[in-house]
Length: 399
Image (cartoon, rainbow, N blue to C red; front, side, top):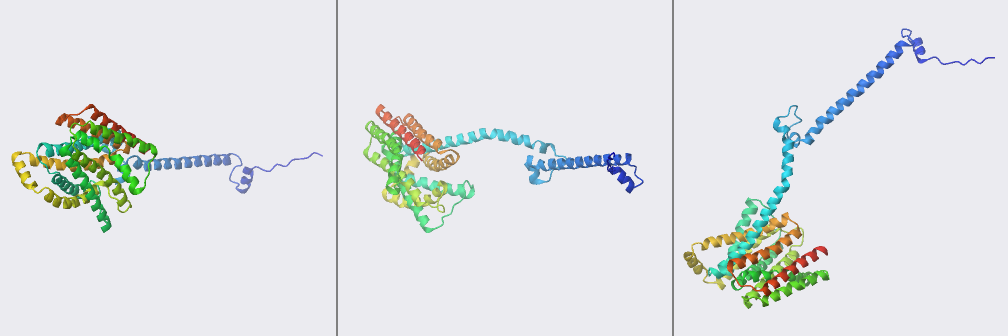
């Protein structure tokens, strides 16, 4: 008996039985093809709309002025369409602009620091203006006035207010120590040449390490302390080979250097909390008036004839008041440029520039004042500078 396999009717036949007006083969095939075509057309339409939407939304990101002002313009103007190339050209020139800005700051920093040093020497030694305390008070007066103008009106840095009485007493203590260091340095310039003054002043890292150990028990690596040996040895050699050596001037210069180091360590102790820390410009703003109050009675007591001699010198030298004004302004400019250079360069760059600044000041002072120097003095100062460089590098590596 032969087995017959029953096949299920096709879908088109079933549809024809259900709907007699549809033909089994041709009509169903055309409708199926049409539905596939409509589905593809609908999918392509959706993809095209999404692409256009994404492109319209991505334009404000590529062109910030469009997104910050209006929605995406349908027909951007020529200036708007050229906005992106302008930004690219400005960004490509920004590194050269930054290099020019930092170079200008360094030149101003060198000029103000060396200028105030040489003008101090000129006034105290050559012009007969033998009043270092009054000269320091003039510096502090200029710093107080110009700091207020720069911070309050020009807004170079934000104004930081004193929050407590104890913070004010700490600032006053720092101001007194700062006055002592500046007065001592100006007194030493009356008796010592600028070259030897800078050689002794280069021993600041030695006193800083000493006071940091005595006051905060902070210890450095033994290599760092070994680097201080040539610093002290070089000053001893330079002192023995200095033709214009003066004992009182040397004592005052050492005292000023020690006071400067003591002030830096004391500042780290007194203003250590985050709420009481001040940047150098705001600290100068608050220290300067205190320094004026302290220096004014001291100048009147220890330099009683300062007013009469200053008036007589002004009548004798018509540029006397101009020199005092320029000198006092440079004293503030030295602090301002030091703050800006510190802010815009690294610590290593600042250290190298500081060491080079002392050497440049020595060379310029020798050429300007023609003070005699010896080979021993130059060798001693060179040893001191190399020791300072080695100390800074060792301290940076062992931090």
